[in-house]
Image (tube, rainbow, N blue to C red):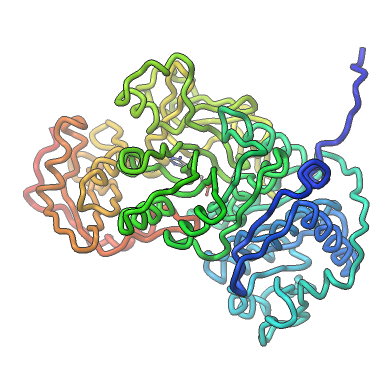
Length: 545
Ligand code: AMP
């Protein structure tokens, strides 16, 4: 017997329809590239998304076609999220921090029909356009007055396109399983791969990520996504904000501590999300100017392991608890968020902090397990680490235009190594390719990095396994000192005894000026290895055991 309830498809356009009807005067505020602040409402965003849909249809974009974007977080990018996916085409967000050749490769692999770009990326577009013959139109996301004088074929002006259209458009009742957005992985090994999200997966992700034990979003929130809209849909915030009716604040290209602080205060932001380096620069700004954030209630950190020292500094000096979250492009991205359970409420500060540094527990809709090399499930004891596998309603099934199935018995291998505890909290100990394998034991590079970063003179640190004649690999610590601070190899190594087993202590420390980062802000260990290829262990390296 079938249930007798309505079946309305879970489609992205319904989010903006809801936001217009029930939160029509709630604001979307953007720092623009042309200069200044732009303000409008969900009602305005909906009307302009419909104009955009009309304009794209007039340009010949059809259901299933890809529309690329090279853009910061801003209101026009938000319109592309809805105006493209809303009528059945696919919003393809591209990371502009990649090398031009990679961007061009991705545009061609996705087979983008139109590509919309922010003015910052004019010269990038100029350089790739000759190599991307499939793109029929290049649209500069600005008005006529600011149109770039650039050598780009079929260059159109976004505001002119919208001005020529009506704001009447009836969103089609799409199949909820149809594709809505496309985002490529960062491709640290080999070419990037496309992850094609469906309307349904995006909607379920938006529902789940808004829950109190996830991001805890509501119509009383002012949300500032620092995490870029070109990286896994800004962790879904452009969807979950209209779902709950929260005010949105977009920072544009100004992601430094001072600019963010100004926006946080002027717009009274209550919730924000970003990678550790963003919060580090905000922390430096707060310290330097002896100032505080007056409205922030929750700050989420993810994308890379957050050094506990950063969490501690925000909490102790500014009374803000940074919450850890973990996910990946293949997971839309949310996998876990760190929120306490009822049984933790009586714990003292130290015990709470020990839980807070973990990556968190999954909301309903995501399942996790850890396995050994033979695929056997490992205990959830908070100690045993193994390869982390996931499955769920917003987890990838197969890559865009790739036949090979990436799943293992219906589970997606994340490439992360983690522990799971009895309360369901997951802690990443490494990327599987970064684990340091020494004398048959595994050493967590993240743990070594966190200890180094707790030293007051250390700005950033990375631990690498370097080949060793006796132990297979031994840990080498690479350190960037804070400006104007001095610290010696011995002082850093003195941080380790008592915190990790003796065999885990790095054998040597190398100081460099800057660590190489990937386009998504993670330390690039591949590049770092290349940079240090001439490194040799000191002859008198101490015995690890
Ligand atoms: P991406 O697909 O570019 O978002 O990268 C996903 C990867 O980033 C994950 O598989 C992890 O290795 C890493 N990552 C994301 N969030 C965290 C976190 N909170 N702690 C540690 N690593 C993280």
